[in-house]
Image 1 (tube, helix red, strand yellow):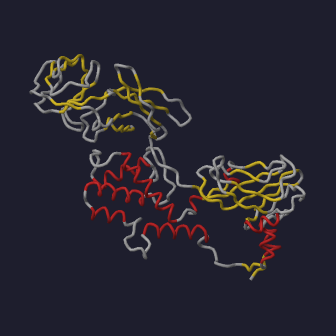
Image 2 (cartoon, rainbow, N blue to C red):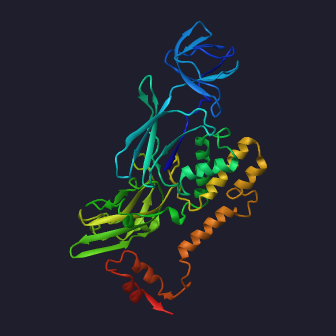
Image 3 (cartoon, rainbow, N blue to C red):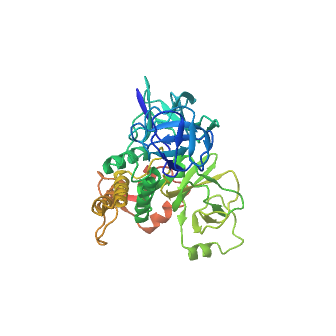
Length: 426
């Protein structure tokens, strides 16, 4: 069995009036003001999350204070009870049995306005972790639907998903009824936490992207061209290097281009009669413009033939924006985002002490001392880069000449070749 939990539409920005006299039976209500209510609107009487809150459809209005509903309420409601106007009255829930399957509606149910967590809950018998769900709200009068929700998996959410992090924030702050902060506000706090982490170090290992290893993002070398756009790179942040593959049978080599200074590059590129070549060795970066916001890289000399070479940029991504419950954060310690958002909710509630405790992982009052959360990420970053468990130094480099030979060399075949020709064992 799987439980599908759907957040009900928020009514705090909906039009509202109040009962102007006690209601005990019948279909005629006396309200303070019926302006903005029209036939076929759906009404919610009572407060969301509270017992005996009910929904009915409005049949007609009369004068300024009379409303007629299509059927009597089940419960009595006292004078002063809130009456909200809502556009949606039902939820259509769809399911598929695997990520490769096709969604089909399994039920349409009325919104459970009296649920204490402001949710509509559906139990799917005999479902498995492989099942996936989506839903959309429906107006049974106009027959209109809302947009589809993100896909909800039958399995428990992973720690790095917005769905999991949202739930943890609400449990830790006691705001399970969404009275202190809306989902959008908490997700915005997650993004601010990501921005703090990214600003601290925009080159963390978990943002590293190698287009050759990924199999996407390559750039074809074109005859007569020396400038190439980086605008095809996803969430591009900072360029780390460029690999180049020369592939013309029987030769198939891949190596790194060497980045050099602007002055050095201009000196090499000064000869306007230089012969084109399919074996580029150096590059420089160029700033972005309206045509390529990610910028460009320039090689010298120009490429001689099309269809032979391919560039593979290596870069650090920007943090992925979080905007829905099915998004995931790249940060390997999602509790840092959770704690920051918990502090945000406590600030809203006016509890500055608790807010400071939770947010201190990312925001330090002492500028000299690094917050513990960022220190942990830095430690993990160093571990990834230094290959923990391996000796610090097992070989001695043969000097600057070897560095020059590693970049742009056209005959590198394997790591064994590099060790034999460029290193001497200690």
